[in-house]
Length: 189
Ligand code: G4P
Image (cartoon, rainbow, N blue to C red; front, side, top):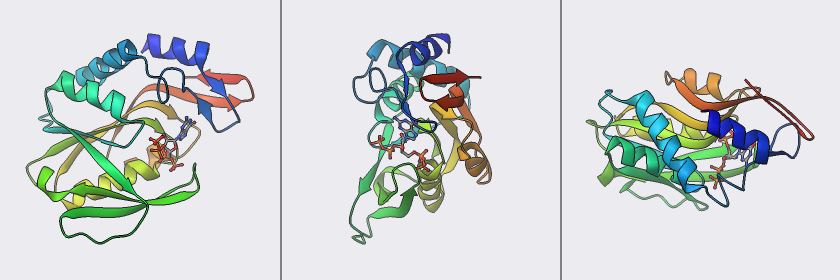
């Protein structure tokens, strides 16, 4: 997506060799027109695959996931993050440990919104080490749902997220891929 790549190069800030700040248009202030284009791009890539729902992890994935769900004409499922480990029979739950944020949280999904007939597209803002995406895949597999793929707005290809997700049989479609980050340097594929 050329517009997205231009935005990343013009407005993104490499705060270190691992972290790209894009809070001016993606995850703090959000550019709605760009989100519409992102939703169209994902919908075009994943069309005609029998997708019944789009899923994301709160909170930064919600904006691109919502426009994707609207473009595909299916509901959006938001996987919730909870700090405490409260067992609940009505939920599918799994622990996610984030390398990027060095924290753990419980990801949960209500059983009433997912079933074995669902074919789900996961959408997220970033793919880094892939822990969040792996947690989302585990939850969907607990429900015997199938995973159509993982769409990410920005993939950092120097981190192992894509391989980790592929090990679980899920293919990744990234709209922009970052090859290298260094102080004030952003290289895209
Ligand atoms: P991980 O295995 O290293 O934890 O990587 P993962 O891909 O699961 O990403 C973990 C969290 O860190 C995600 O946010 C993701 O959006 C964020 N993240 C990863 N790399 C970057 C980066 O270069 N820049 C920015 N701005 N964020 C990054 P999250 O835990 O889902 O939280 P939220 O922001 O959605 O609330």
